[in-house]
Length: 400
Image (cartoon, rainbow, N blue to C red):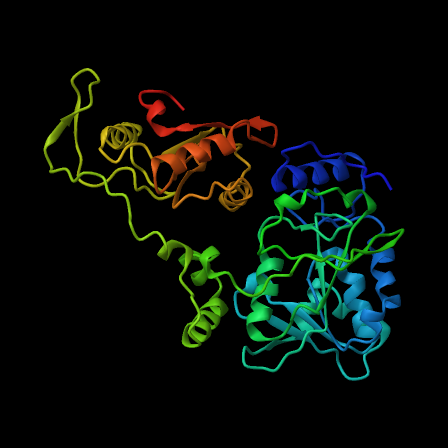
């Protein structure tokens, strides 16, 4: 079957997500919640696609099934409960653990089981599964934004399905033989280029749509565990279970160096005393008491300080390692920008987010890396806005 959505050469994961979301909205192919942007779409016909899992041998023979909490997978959760199998769902955003086990009341009716399969039921009838519990997951069912018949999968960009699987590998709950299933609308079947797939990306073995069951015969290896070099300290703070797994693997002698620990050679600006410094603007002067470039999202530093800080950085011997991004849509979230940068292989050491001013500054390890990021992000368009991307030194004295 010819894909409904055609992809051009050089397309990124983010481009593919946008195309799928836009196409589904334009053709009214989804149910509540709408719009589908930044979600796993609750596509029309999801219940029919979910019902097809009942005929898969990998479902019939398995006992423990892990199903993502997305709305379009409600039918899979219900089928799992009706078959009296153990249903595991991920803890929301992995804040308190990895799994919750759905335990319906004794003698639950069909209606109660239906309630248990919903988001509210997951909250009301689930109990956490401890990290030390012996869990063997036979089948994993995930949501997708796009998928190819070769098994390449693209999620909504937050990386939780990939991370959850990697964590399950670390816990010994899954292995290379664990079957992965996804459900999508037929329009979400695309010819995804394999070069977009990274070693942390989860592939799928079966695709269920309202009209067909596709066995991918995917030969690409699934994630072999947590890739600690892709995990940073911020993620460790947000996902406490990562700390426990990090401790375990460190104790076992594995390399658990985090992403931000690999770049210990921080670029430092020259230290300035509290002398007055000319700004070159009508003889005005200002005092520099701290590095004005290291600003938080809620910084109240003046435009004048920002300009001065960038000018000092550009003139410093360390050369330009900061990239400016302007014309960022007001609706874009910082987490979404991070996903876009990851898709374009332009992840910075630090990201200075200034969403209110529709801009961001990206700090890289060296001048070459910064220039490569500019090249990689050239022509980037987000939600119809063409993003201005250039080395920060060319922003001196301009209005953003």
